[in-house]
Image (cartoon, rainbow, N blue to C red):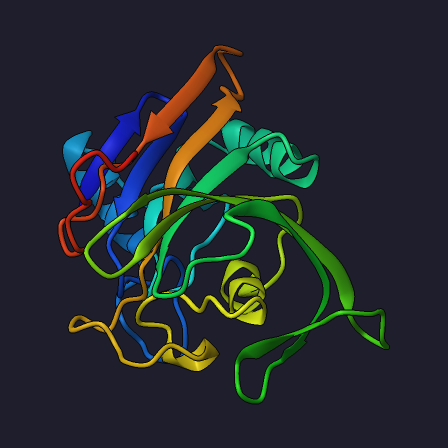
Length: 224
């Protein structure tokens, strides 16, 4: 477990691809339980240890996840999340270069639980939610383009389905149209930066995760 930030009220972890944040039908140990056990052992806490999930990432996605160590922090962070006051920046690798290289995608997204998949539509339709993000190309590897993405809305699989809708599925994301899987089963999407005001101290917090070691190296001169 890679802890990026910790104080008395919150803990931020750089989640590895393949980990689940909360329990699901697989029965695999979720990250929240790993964090809870760490708190229990690190601080020798008896009984049930509080650890609140603030937000999640898809299982094949890596990056920064916030957990609350106190109920006060959890309630305030939940409200901040609802108000859009926790800013998350993502990066992704795509085989195809988006055209234009910097832009905004707006579409209407529906989600189907049966196949755990979302769909992007260019016009409103029943059950679809208006969704938007901005992106820009910031670098290259030998065969891929590095994109920086900012969500304006938060829909299920939004980045994955909207990039695919402009012909740029994320590297390794077979569900949304990429050609081949990554060796570790991940997709090349990372929540690499978190910016928010601390829920208790009210101080600004700005955290970043390193470029993933499992991704192809950036070309010389490419921006990170």
